[in-house]
Amino acid sequence: MTIPEIMNALGKLRSETESAYEGYKIKKMELDSLKTLLKEELETIGLKSAKTDEYTASIVQKPSIIVTHEESVIDWLQHNPDIEPDIYIGLKKSSFDPLAKSWFAKTGEVIPGTDTQVSEYISIKNNKKDKK
Image (cartoon, rainbow, N blue to C red):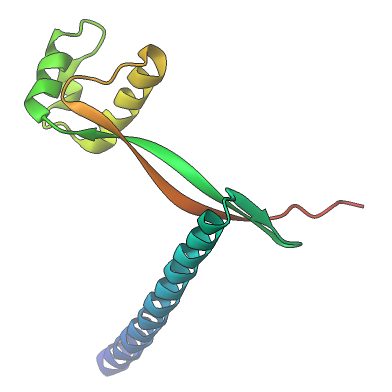
């Protein structure tokens, strides 16, 4: 391929990618809107789930741990002999979150400087087909 051919191919592909992304954003907004509508309808009639021939929808509660005071968490990490605090320097949420969830599950206590938060979302799953 020549340089102009490569540039033309890249330009065309970039345009196609941008167009596809715009289509994705529209579909994602439609998806979010329908999930919100379904959740509201289920809550209105007092259901936590619904099922059709093809799909099952459920309102799922997802607990999470949020850091409310980073210094308290770091102090707790430094004074807990079972945990290597150097792993959590800068308190990166991705590495701290599993520890906090595990600690909460094991002890029923939240780490000082953290709190629990429960969020609800709609889970949509395909129903398993009967194997014959």
